[in-house]
Image: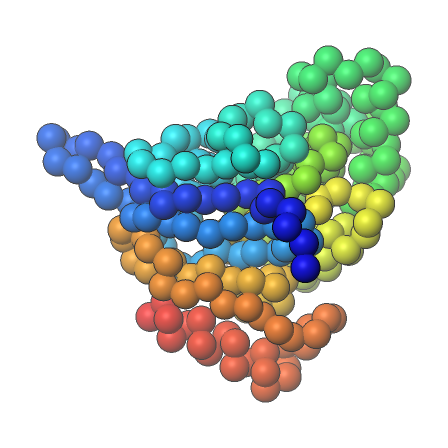
Length: 253
């Protein structure tokens, strides 16, 4: 047992917007922690605030009430230990794979030699060796998302946040990338140390996560926080896998 503080603390976070003079509540008192070696998925019905919650966690939005703390301090978009992979690939079409991956390092004013070394390391880690000088238009959807992943990992984050990163990909490509994420997460020599992912696919959450947070419909509250105790690698055809999927489905419906 360790007394080490969690990496991430989401403390009674609520989010509201004002529309025509009326308060429109999206999230209501969300509370959970995330520690090193955690892989947590957030699921829930459409419009329940999953992506809004993730944006607050990475510092792109602020809670109306409550706090999001990373290593005990409020999160900001400049936090180098927290990286984000978006649903859209968010690549610059006029930049090569290497240049896209190096963007975050360039923003941190890393010297060119260091940028190039780190970008090559993570381009290789996500299986894109040989495509360093390709432009986004020359890549498939899965390859573009690998570039986004390499860009996030090049910052060597402790926490990797992902917002439905495989939703626009075909089934086989998505599954290959899920396995790639698990491989990176379990490799002690590579970032990240923890993963927080939003998904609308219950099977994806059960396949990947050791903990699943289920949100209710708007305003989103935590309906359940489930420990998925299935051994890895997980088999979708096993009754226990179906059991977890059915339980989460019933909570959402």
